[in-house]
Image (tube, rainbow, N blue to C red; front, side):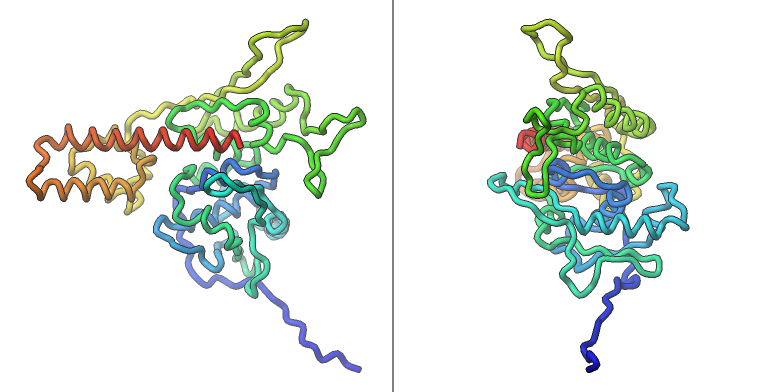
Length: 361
């Protein structure tokens, strides 16, 4: 008897809106410092193109995100001939990817898949357009985020190593101090070189009963995970140097054990407002308003990213209220700069503490 059941072929959508990409990608601290398994550069680029469409004033995730395949291959040296297979492989990775997260208040641990494959609209590729559905349960990490890592998308998209991308993300969180000093254990966890686990999350053991670890020899760890990022990031604002941190005392003979690393950004903040800020209409408007209240370019350059445009606008509004009251500001340059710098330093200190807490989880 003929089977009359209808088999419906679900295809990804053609382009239904014009993607509006930003020059800056913002990523929540708990995403940056999540225990991320290593994935291909193509998969990381796809996620970057999704995240860069999420706006500061968004209250919900879009039902789906779309962009052209040229948005991920232009800077990557991928040919059109191999792009289709590259996208297929990357989307397979992303649909299988599950990261370990801490809850926003740090009280819970849980696992979430990054993408949602349960909807009628499918994750996939059609007619040069990639469609991605983020897991709606991750909405707090991507929408209305208060604390985030910022990095320039153009430089990020040109990187060809997963380790380079991880360095780009993490070092962006340490712009203010210019130094990241993880222990060897923290570094291994951030770079997916910690204890190997089976499908149930149980740590694998070697024949002697010791936990198996990727690149167990520290010299091999350095060569495999640091050498390439040093070269790839050399031409960016996140060019860095590194030095190992050794144990203070050793009870037995032999070389002192490496217990951590110190990564130092080579470029110091020069107090100049980056040109690409002024190409963004929202940021340019905030900069113009701060200048009108006599906040110096140096202080804007040093603290605006950490204060944030929304908080900066609130300060300007408060100054305007003050100006229209009986408590007028006699010296804008002195008063407004002092308030703005104090707010910026407080934000930097808070963010630095949260980064350290995330690393200790």
